Image (tube, rainbow, N blue to C red; front, side, top):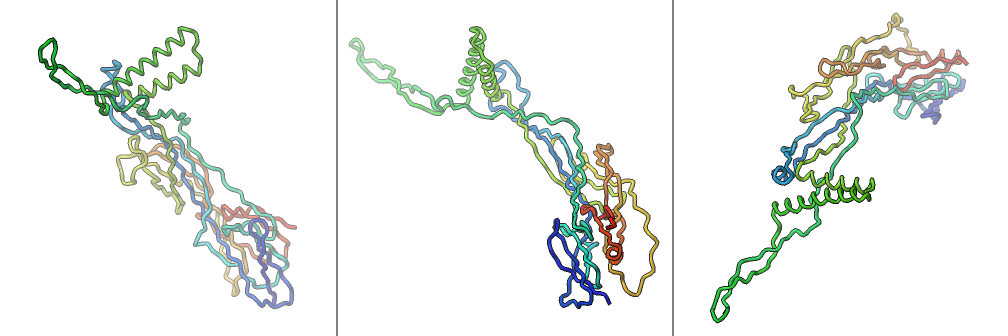
Length: 370
């Protein structure tokens, strides 16, 4: 009776060597565990939020500058910049196997990835190939145009106030009440800041005109004055602040013709709850599932044949929909919806065969006869 001895070592990612020695009894049971993968997708949604920030002095804009601000109330406007589907392999708990030392074979090498997925058998090479990323990009991303929101501290926050105070004193031989002001300082009020900022704003414009008139204006000086004027104007007119927001969702296909609502989106709130029916749903749907024809079932033998299990994956068209509008479609490999097959170990040993697998899918990549 033949015996098989497995010796575990590192080759490639993780290599497990099965070394056979004839007519030698095993003293320690040895087994190799591995799992077939299933494909899931990290769906990365990149959004841009444009926040409208009203100027603190907007009610003075018409009075001081003769213009009406467009931004009177705070608000947000959201847009989706791109959606990326990033495939990843996950262990399939329904397809986990153990390769036991039972039998006697020539040297067999089992290559397993760090995640426990098959990479090769009877060969020292491993393969870590991954599928390409699926990317939906509706338009080009706009450049950020943030305006710093500041209240300028160029002057003191206090102002001088003269209180009325009368004293009696002799003037030209007569006792009269004479105004004797008392100086004190108090914090400036909003209207004081408005007046100062208005003066500074017109001073900036005057400075620009002087530089242009005298011919001493440089591109750097004009750019700095323009930026300073925009900052001052934002206190009256308001500003828009742009920010990038990234959210990641997970989708694992589980059955044919499956449609899953990933998230709901609105321009006012961005991504909202899935039960918010007033927001637009973004849906992933599997269509046109193709499963290869299964082999005719074999008669069960009295003793199971030591084998290595692998997959013949299914393929399907993966649709990304915005409501009923198709945004993107791509053909994808869905191993968990395919067929599990087995390769007898004695064939590998007797014929000197080396197998390579796609670790991401658990499918056969190549069969090499040495």
